[in-house]
Image (cartoon, rainbow, N blue to C red; front, top):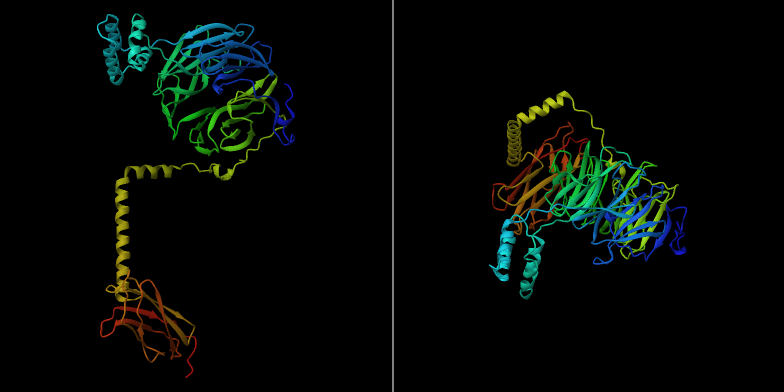
Length: 585
């Protein structure tokens, strides 16, 4: 690898985990993570970088191969590449892998950097009504405007979609329709789908140098598995929507799983001997990245979140939208992580939901690839939005701490509790509850109603008999509670009266005390209450002297009356404490 400019080197090399091996801001590489791969194309133990360059999107689409920091070769592509993979297609020596480039409805296979084979997707069923309409146009039985009306009716109602020819015809201006019909009416109608994603699946062995099959997802929701030698369709599966992202694991002859993110915002899992998906994960927003690590599936979504689907689900919130995702696999250290490129010129590295590293980049990253490049195992290759190429090498002394560097709950919160095993008694009790759920619920509701009724009756009884220091009137918006302070023989008695009405004041009230005059004496046994404003608390204080030295106590009754009336509005019973002394007369 060549050296980098001085301004791109880390300011603290000792603390950095990455070495800046190469940065070319004008490499003119415009690609995505699905169109980039590392492969030992010549069998010399030195991996090259293979890139499907999108060019301008209209022209200059090329297949480029880099060795080190220089361009080794490039080949022109006829259409935009949608995916690129490296795979071994046979057991012949020397064991050199082939490159498969998906483009439109075709897969171009290159071996030794030369065109080797071209696979074409099978044609789809054509709507018979559409064929009949074009047959009438070919025989000049209908004019172009009538043809347009009939095709529009078919487009809105037909179960089989229209062909590309009919869709293009419906987009034309009226003056252009006649020339289009004369040009195409003699040609047969074909309906062709295109490839949206591509992957590889080991044939019968899990070895790194084992023969692999091609797995392709198409626009019409089909997934094909191709034979690596004859390029025939070995297996076909169907999805409810168009596949956009794909991850494949397992062996075709044994057991495999294909995890697919679709355009309808769901993730489906396809398995062997099942032409349709059995498992579905519904996302809150559309997926833009999909990485699988063993049994863990990590998905980046458009709402700036990262979701992990394992035995326990987790969500990480990102500071910017996701631009690309890739797997970081370092078998020599037994280390795996997820690399997430963000629109704020950062690449975040996650292990489970823990953010363990942040890489700053000079531009927004559009594709990421990690693996062996040249003879370096831990090489990180990135391309940027402006067409730049970044190469970083992981230091051999780099250590990643599993502790999350982002603020949030501690790791201990995600540790699973050691739940004891279910006993036979627990299982029997669970079965009994399931069988008698309705009866148990009814019994619980009846007991709860009885408890509420008993509590309500006791509360009403206490209010009516005023057997508590707190009392409330049933006819007037009044509430009163009493507090006794002191050890004796002198006690301070405080009455707190409150008007509970919303806006109406209460007036012309008085307080009278009834007590045993041989036990107690009060300085003031009768009070006139001032006007009570709603919501305010009015304390009224008086002093009580205990006259007995026998250690006995009694009840003092409190009555709230309206002036001129004999019936009390509010009553309360105050249990006086036992006096610890005798009053001195």
